[in-house]
Image (cartoon, rainbow, N blue to C red):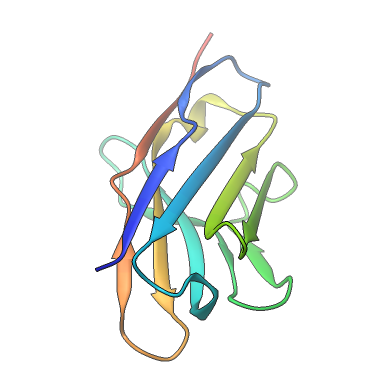
Length: 118
């Protein structure tokens, strides 16, 4: 059974930066596409960024393009989300999500809170 554990969330002032990490175990990391989602209070969960299992192919929500960077380290079975120029509207619980490239296997992390406030 796969496990995803997010870390790195916290309280940051507008314009600040945070780096989220998602450490994984229990599955073959390199066979999974990895994603970060977020859910703000009263809103639906939304895709923030994704990275494919191979290569450097990434995608981002329009709202975070140019400010967030997703990356993965297949040697550490970990995916990261570097967040810069943070805005109050980035406040949300951030979730890590793994989806197998071909099969239906998928896993969610428990989430980490990010709060952007002065």
